[in-house]
Length: 178
Image (tube, rainbow, N blue to C red; front, side, top):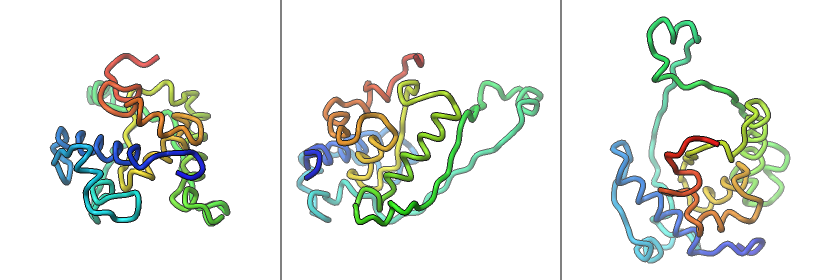
């Protein structure tokens, strides 16, 4: 906020968007929709983040079944298959502990992993129709927009204000990929 001018309202808008999306997700832990004002006026956890901008302690899981192209073809699964065109994993860098909050929550790691995937796949953020992020804290989500290269560093608040990451926005669309 001090460095780039992000506002408490922009963080609250991320919480608002995430709760709005949860209503349409039958697997969401909570499916309650709140107004922006309710998000802003909920109990303060750590200024400027309120309770409704922070995820509760919870567990989750995910699974992926990896198969060869031959297996997919043999079993008629092409219509359900997702092709992996790039993947990367990073771990703590020296910068993780440089004293900045953004690196402590993984900014540099996310940025490096995104660059590796973009290089491997020949794709960039402009090629994607939907980008979905873990919403542990609205501040982390804003930083991740920047780390993924959706915008320049310090411009995540503009994505929020432009509704680029919600229904009908730049990265929440049903239009064909560019």
